[in-house]
Image 1 (cartoon, helix red, strand yellow):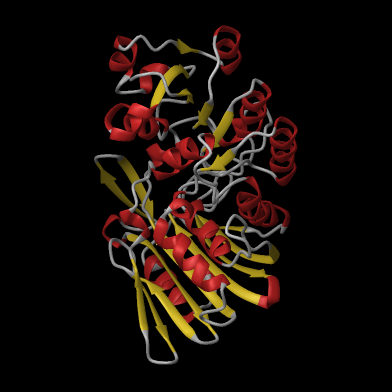
Image 2 (cartoon, helix red, strand yellow):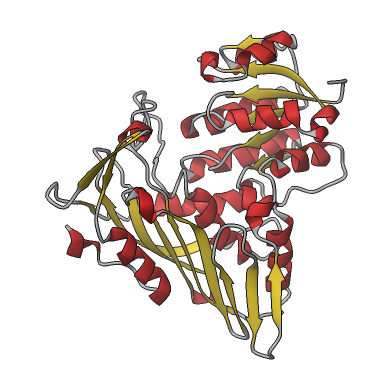
Length: 386
């Protein structure tokens, strides 16, 4: 790599390896130079040897990196509870930042990040990848232009099984707080499926780089796994103008019952449907016209990285920044503050399935119930499966 936009990767295991591979393998990586990597356990990265062979220094902490070096862009893929602290530190040292989703665990943390960004006049993106996808951005432009009329309802559904290994991979998975007391609020809504809750809010935001903020949220929560938070959620989110949004997601479903993210909206003059996968988003208008938009999954996950690189070069704006991501964090905080009881599925109804990834705990009938709730636009009666 020749000198270009210098990048420090904060977290190179887990999802951080996606960013690392983009920089190493994709043509646009030639525009960048990896100035350093930060990870207290770098051995979890499968490309560590290659990284070191390129002479990239690896540090245990972000402070160690900035004591020794500098970077134009900090790409932060660390645990949720570290996002605010590390982004604020990065911009204080003159870096711009791309923070992986969610922005942070709490609204005060997001507000602190906004204040730090503004003080340093930095550029900060948040890695809700669909919000960087050109078809989603065009869809949002058409929605906000009034082409489909006022939004009435919206829903999304994702069913991704996760084994007990998923919840044992670190000391904060499935926890409200980490061992040091920092807020995490880990759940499907704030981690694996966070993109799709945010997408409902993002599409209804006014300006391109804003999301619709929740006015109220009514969650129904349950768990089959031995965790503090929940692995199953049905939530009704009401945003401005009384638009009802329904978010449905679960990890406690059978391996054969997985459902890739899908969403739909009803507008005054159109209906919108995305059935998931690589299918297009289809909008059927009352005047008889049908519009198709490419699947957001067709856009590489690395688009958010290159968009931030472009923004630093002054040739692009950031469609998903801290203000946009704040609406999602408002929902997560609203779920926590709602006091909603987490229903524990009875051991007698939970099935166990041994997989290559570990033991999967799942509830028969749950996937069908959530599918029906999605089709009807209702919240599921989870107590009927307890």
